[in-house]
Image 1 (tube, one colour):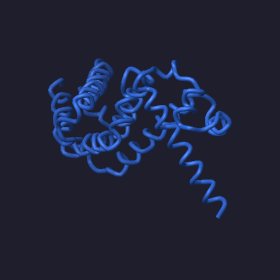
Image 2 (tube, one colour; image 1 turned 60 degrees about the vertical axis):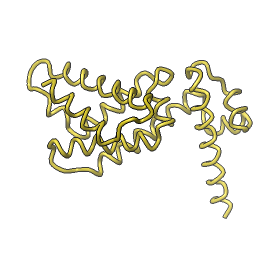
Image 3 (cartoon, helix red, strand yellow; image 1 turned 30 degrees about the vertical axis):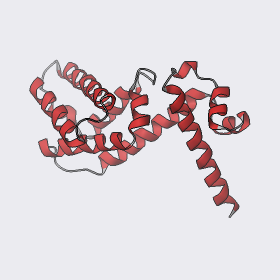
Amino acid sequence: MKEIKQNRKTQYTQMVLRDALMELMEQKTISQITVKELCIKADINRTTFYAHYTDPNDLLHKIEADVLLSVSKAVSSLHSPIDKSNIILIIQELLLYIADNNKHIQILLSERGDINFPKELFMMIYEKCELMALAPHSSTKEFYFIFVLNGSVGLIQHWLKSGLSKSANEMAQIIFNMAAQIK
């Protein structure tokens, strides 16, 4: 019984710290956020913070790792032959996850987050989905991939900033069609 209570308490503490960090990151970069600010915002003491994380960057990296794991699980569940409809379905699943978690994801993908996170996220998706195989076969394959990767990140950032003005399915179609036109 005590272990269950401890587990719930730990989960609650981690949740309030994550929410506090995301709220602070709406106004500041991660390098400007202090442990003291986080603790005040989350209404916990510093000792509790340090029981879970070493610093705000550690907390941010654990949030990012959780997002990567969730997206990886979602993408892995969609194994099937690679064709247009399956690729669009994979992109749509990703966009639905982003929409469901849009407040945190918008911050993680913004300039206030870790600059490498969006690229890491999409690189993982494209590798898992073997989307690199769809790129033109030439010496410019890597450049094509980087262009599509950065374009996808930019489109999703715009979609989030515009309040999810299009459905996940519409955005998946747009991303796929734009990438396909580049070939």
